[in-house]
Length: 568
Image (cartoon, rainbow, N blue to C red; front, side, top):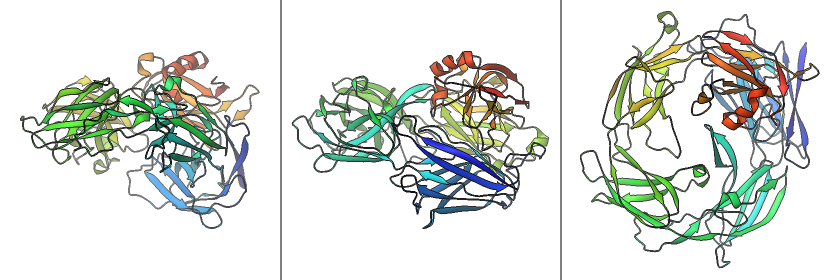
């Protein structure tokens, strides 16, 4: 008996006219996991998979097959990541897939990229559960043609502005903060100031134009202070005053014209020496900080001269982190950073003093019986800053775990949170301790030129799991929703993604959230949630009255059948 599952993709709620697309999944047997099966061990010697996944990709406007579309299937838990390209008939196939839970996405040139189960722009897709020896057919995608935005950028005299980077940007919550981030591919103006943006999903955007103010070489010592501020349509340096551009499905918007805003630029200069006070060679980068720093991405370079001095030209007003990486950029290279604020006047006598990376040594703590299933050589210990408010360079690479579960990592100064990746499915970090003090959430305080020892990272394969189904007001099971789980303690809503999780249902409508630390939580099922929105503390506060409270202990598995709520 063949089971047929219809998944409707509606793109988009923001569009004036929506187009329905159908994904058909066909295959033998039950498409959900069997709870009676023993857990898989991803670290055991890899076996050849026995499942097959195939389908077809067509254009939604014409129904014609799309050749050379890229289809990606991935499973973080299984460490599987494969790519297939459609043939002349738009068909693709994956063979020998191990059983597991997969993400599936499709992209093609000027078309809007889609994920399996995606129903709206900027919404996460759904997982696809695949069993051993299963053949899943007709996982078909109907890609809508992307919208196009064209226009022209001129200078203050109405002359064409060439080589200007033009992007569409939108606000998105990242790590509990609202950021203005680029959406889609950027464009560069041609010799007559024209730009063309394509493959745009429907939505509302801010159009920005940025002239690289330091087009001259980092060695250039020009005294010219004239330049242009990042400009937002219809012609303002302040995004709060900008006009949003609404883009529908497959729409072409032409003749968006604006003039760049002239501004006075500054020069930032100073010296860069290593920890011994010796002049160093290399580059100093001015990295923008703040809420809109990702949107600007205008990193200004300055060459370090033989005497250790440097000069960065064409720096617009704003807050920056000056970062320098000395030596050969390896794990033992020195680095230095300092924050500066530019308000149109030159900033002089900035001193960057290098610091050697600190050695962070320790060991993984694992139950001896469970440790037999781990392969230390496949795991790495890495560190990320607890607080980030800008682009971060000069972070050391992850450190290998030795067979005796010890490790030695290199770290830059700062408050760092330790991670172990990749971990097998069902495994997580129980605690990180430094000299018996729990620093799992607060991070490890790494000071310049100081080594840190006695670090313990305790792993567990008894991570809690929450799963279930969702019904609507009529009691019918729904298959399109997002579940959000967040702590009752509001202090844990920001800067620590392990406590705030979201989940989408598989093709049978069941959600599953794993690797959740033990604790007291709230859970809610919502009709629609944009990517990253569940990390917004204000959003979580609005959802709190709709959520149900629960507690979960280590190793506990709970099932919650939830009622669907509106996110509005």
